[in-house]
Amino acid sequence: MASGSHSDAEDGLMVEFASLQLQDKPDKPPKHYRCGVCHEIGQHFINFCPQALKTGVKTPYQGKRRAFGEYQCCECRRLWQSSRSWANMAQECQSCRIRIYPHRQTPLHKPGGLDKIDQDKKHPAELCEKCTKLGYSCVLHNSKESVASPADEEDD
Ligand SMILES: [Zn+2]
Ligand SMILES: [Zn+2]
Ligand SMILES: [Zn+2]
Image (cartoon, rainbow, N blue to C red; front, side):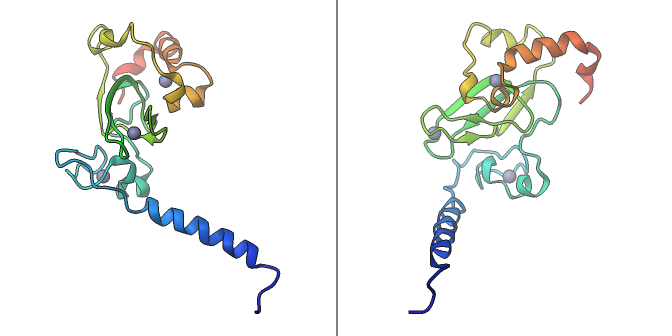
């Protein structure tokens, strides 16, 4: 009866609110899942870590270089690994296309170590947030960086 003009805007807000609340209640991760930010086990996926939200620290590794990362999708629970995992950078789940932060990361300080395993595999640039941000493959970014500043390496 009353509100004529601004009812449209209010409806829009209501819809957004509802979808936000849905995202607020994620499924619990598997029992052995360990959040890489706050280190709680089986409580939440790293994507929903309260500490990560507060601090802005979204991944276990905070160095400048790439790391070996383990990811688990909070929707379909698919697990995958990547040796091109970066600090505060997500990778998308192939099937759900949502961004997932790595819950575990191991720095790759030794060339020829873990690094080699991944060398002939194609890096899925379209799923990698780092690639998206750079506008080119982060594979190239890494080799450029290690040429430019080799002394940087031990620095995290
Ligand atoms: Zn956490
Ligand atoms: Zn998924
Ligand atoms: Zn990448």
